[in-house]
Length: 82
Image 1 (cartoon, one colour):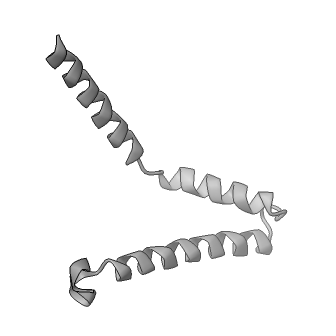
Image 2: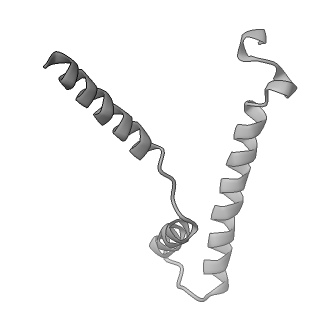
């Protein structure tokens, strides 16, 4: 009985970890970005709205580059070298 409970808890933990790793689809990301720009007061179909979307995308790309740069083992060496 105890091993069955342990297995069920292990399966539940694995399921939670997999659910936490789920990513957004491009359509979901676009909808979220559009809602963000609309919440800032920009109206859909305007140049300002397009600029807002572009800035969100550029910011996301800059964060991605910074993350890759900070975690580049070949550039900095492993964390224990620092």
